[in-house]
Length: 180
Image (cartoon, rainbow, N blue to C red):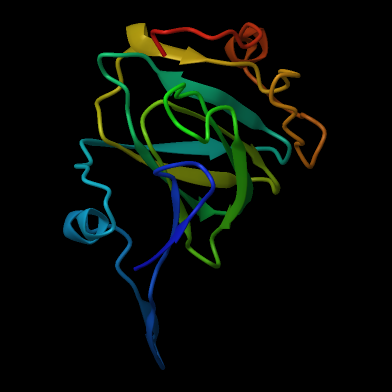
């Protein structure tokens, strides 16, 4: 696996290193010890799949509160998407910085998102499937978010929003919150 750091501390784009032959290719997409060698010591406890019917769908911007902040490894299994993260960790030099990475089913790249960083994505094609691996089991009472179009972040989504949940649309404007 090839690790590409981003400007957000602890967030990396993970590119599979392919072994190719006439059949196609084989590549490792998760290895706990390989992540540890790159300074990311995590165990994945849960995996979830998100199917999105329409291009322009937005999910996010989500994060989880203490004591169960979760790290995520996000990969586009089918289709193409723009994955966006915003650092909400006040103790990091990358506080309030954002990174946008296109993920698709051809490159098979993934984005590792450390705890305390908000995450969202927009699908760029119809029928887009997104696989999440998480370091914590989902706890709905600790789920939180910031608005996808909050002027504090100025995220530029490439398509008009076609579908978004009421919950994601209703998140409040960003304010510094010591619990996040």
